[in-house]
Length: 494
Image (cartoon, rainbow, N blue to C red; front, side):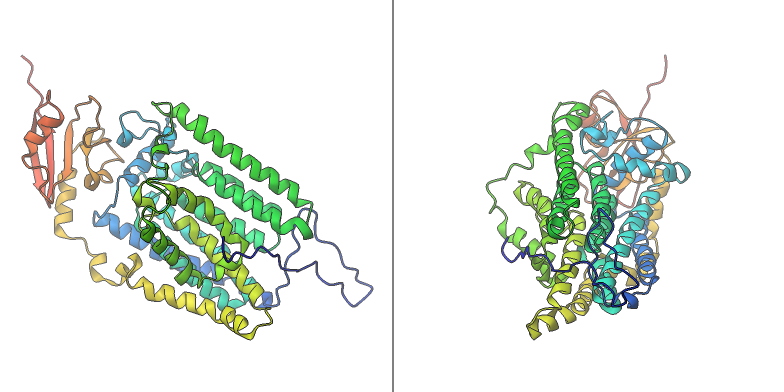
């Protein structure tokens, strides 16, 4: 990659003290020597935690507010609730929204979501998932802010923390309901913090669980391990074999997951997403969108300085599969796809800024010194047009009467009923009903059909229901706020 400088900082072990009565000791076996940090004393232990709490409140308020206003963006929240609900009741992780009886491990390999089962068992609501995601994203702020303050000083570190916590990639992910990558973001952040503070084996330990978050993240774990090996080759060579072993293990785990584990749970004995990651019409397909995503990734977030750190290479696996895909949803800055890149580019900036501060060129030192404040300022300015700006709007905290009417309409559906639905009603039903995606019940005639029909796309609801289920008869049970509820008519016994 152009602009990536792979030279390591020549920071050896700490110099021996001048007093001969206190001999110096070598760094612990298996650790990278910690870089000198003249500003370490300025780090306030509480700063990263306070920032994390504030951002957790903001993330949670945004997510819960969107849920209360029925502004769910996709079916993912419903899918993950079905999966975690199954885990909470010690059942196989079936997501009926992907098809009746479909085991989610045959779609994406994300067993890490089972960790939310105990909390969901206590609080069986999709809000549990949204709060957990807010907590995971906020947790990642702690290592980012902490290592930035350690290497650059307290105030630059806090500025980096603000820039990261308000970064567009994190905000878009918070807006996007819930996704398993929420677990990956803090794992990557803690791993890179350990790498930058000279704890090579800790970095590997934080990276390896990524293979349980999502199948492609095994390649990200391998990339982290290779960067650990690269940085350790001169100063801590004992770590190099361990890092290479972790890289190999992560790649093998990813290959086995793609080729064997997912197909074993998939009814078609395959990995369904191969058809998307096929290169499209070529790597230049959608070049303008891809270039814009790279610009957003590197300019406001890092001022291009991240390109001076080898840590930026860790972003390549995620960018690779996204940009090689024929699905244009992966190319842009919307949805949740860039969240895992935010800790990578931010800590690559921290790594590069630390080294450039020792540059013999005054303009380079000045740029590195002022960039953290610029990154924080850019994040604050951009937030006015990003999801968190909604927290400044009074309507965010008021639920519209039509939403209440829709909720009363959906409350007519009894618990444990079978329901066919589109995006709007899903998250209000998956905690208590068996919910299918509209048009994909595969022969099952559900008790109810609940649809967001605000645009009038359904036309005649009973006729539409008849097209979906020729053997069933449905009648309109109610309408409210653009939603329509149809109930299956049961023929009386003769």
